[in-house]
Image 1 (cartoon, rainbow, N blue to C red):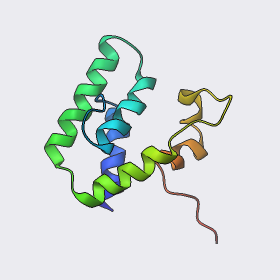
Image 2 (cartoon, rainbow, N blue to C red; image 1 turned 30 degrees about the horizontal axis):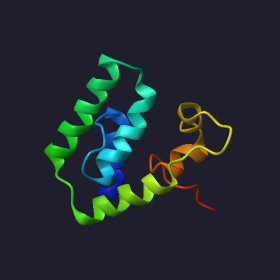
Image 3 (cartoon, helix red, strand yellow; image 1 turned 60 degrees about the horizontal axis):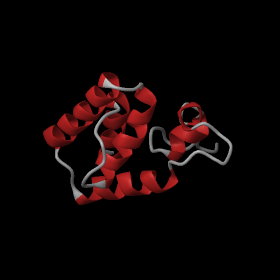
Length: 101
């Protein structure tokens, strides 16, 4: 599934400051958890490079936009801790929702 692949690349890379599309914005949000200073800058650069290498299509943009809309920690939760939970990963497009048997 191509949109999930893009999001997984963003997660693995955790990079780029959002400045143009939902996938970049999602990458920027996730890079908040990669540290600060040069570590965060490297994260952002890697996301930018990955997005440029694979190219973004309209369905990718739609998947990133949907994830960006739901990738917000609940009130009182710390984003970087929350995004590591099963619910946070699903909300941010980093994992598939659980399936019911």
